[in-house]
Amino acid sequence: MSAGMANGDFSGRIVIVGASLAGLRGAEALREAGFTGSLALIGDEPYPPYDRPPLSKTVLTGWLPAEHTTLPRFVDLDADWRLGVAATGLDLAGRRVLLADDDAVPFDRLLIATGTRARLWPNEEEGALDGVFTIRTRDDAAQLRERLAAVQSRVLVVGGGFIGSEVASVCRELGLEVTLAERGPAPLSGALGATAGSFAERLQRRHGVDLRTRVTVLALEGEGGRLRRARLSDGDTLDVDVAVMALGAVRNTEWLRGSGLAADGRGVVCDASCRVFSAEGVVLDDIFVAGDVARWPHPLFDGQLIAVEHWENAVAQAATAAHNMVCPPAERRAHKTLPAFWSNQFGLNIKSVGIPSLADEIVVTQGVVREGRFVAVYGGRGRIVAAVTVNAPRWLPFYKELIEARAPFPPELGVADPPPEAFVRPAGFPPPGQATHSPTVASTGPGPSSPPGSLAASSRQAEVTPETLRDPRVPVGPLPL
Ligand SMILES: Cc1cc2nc3c(=O)[nH]c(=O)nc-3n(C[C@H](O)[C@H](O)[C@H](O)COP(=O)(O)OP(=O)(O)OC[C@H]3O[C@@H](n4cnc5c(N)ncnc54)[C@H](O)[C@@H]3O)c2cc1C
Image (cartoon, rainbow, N blue to C red):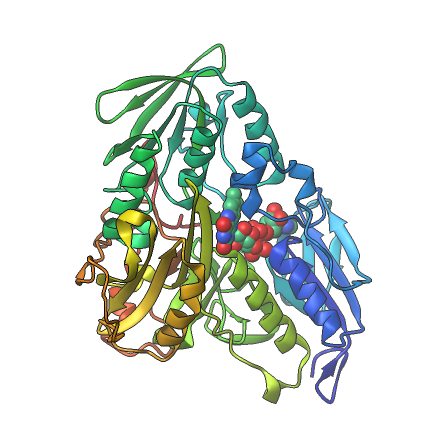
């Protein structure tokens, strides 16, 4: 029995590594569950937990100052905050988290919530040029906002996923010329498929984005340490002073290297109750994980391991992990919240539920695409696996229920007046190995209970080889450690 455990009520020492959304909400859920033991939060950023979604939206437009993104607190935590110091290692046998300042924090139970970071431009020298930005932290957003407010040249956005598209949208809102280079067939095609991506493509062009699809950036060139030009694979050279790298995210798992946990560049593997697996495949009762860094078997998708970079998932998974950390073993519950995401761009609200990238097919079930208000439903192996709404958020809960009920695809909705585009088309996700921007929710392989031939088999993670990594174009997929 672990320290502090009596009749299923845990009152020992809990340490949370990663003091952001999942870390904060996990800590609050622990206190709400009646946990009275000692609680420490370790975060490498100097700030108290803040919200990231506004960073690529209202912070960039200048509407919301970056320092006003601090997350609200719902519970008095009575916690020891260790901010501005990174965890550098985990001593599993000694039950200690090792810190960059050479201190070590003992724990009885640990919650890992170290999330992801922005993937950097693969050429270090080019990436260090003044004018090359990524956007993951509050400081990133504040600096980029300052530069966008003063920039004279065209802005280059590299990568047409959600964040890249949002940055392009903000540029147009600010009246800036912007080129977006996306190696896939359309913006958002990694997350939503090329068919839905064609809508995003028309949207961006209509709003004046100089969109280059199936185009990669080959090199960035500077003068006196400042970015001046970008060479594109379509033969063009752009004069740019600002380039925003929106190349996807990398999971923060390096600090766990050699710790004995099942953690690599794809995330930290846990069971459905958020308990982390050891590298040998044993479920550990005292180590939990939540948020962007987690990889867990989703009961609704054949138990395959999924990784989700979504705000709502971080909150829900942290709550499940916290509950399971302090409840009696028989009361542990599975984290089976459906992945859900929102984005605001070019005046539209885009919402998604489920896992679009598992789909083979797509059909518009409500609304009219050219009017910019519709629902698209995604099907994989005869089931509804996801739905996306554009300017129609209120229609989404209905489809969420269909996904949870494993309803058949195409759906029989009995609509008297179906939309003009109500025919089934290929969803247009790239086959494995064919590069595009990686999705923010994806299957990362079969889990312990995935049956052969299940949805997991259709997992579409692009292989990352050393060659891909050396390729100076947009890298794809998870980086191996
Ligand atoms: C610009 C932007 C826009 C977004 N927009 C949306 C949106 O519109 N909708 C949506 O659903 N989601 C959006 N997201 C995603 C959402 O913000 C994430 O899903 C969420 O932040 C995940 O929370 P987390 O706590 O798991 O991870 P994170 O927020 O990544 O937090 C992890 C924390 O751990 C810290 N850390 C890492 N390693 C260590 C270490 N070794 N020691 C100590 N601390 C460490 C990190 O610095 C960070 O503070 C957006 C993300 C970004 C960056």
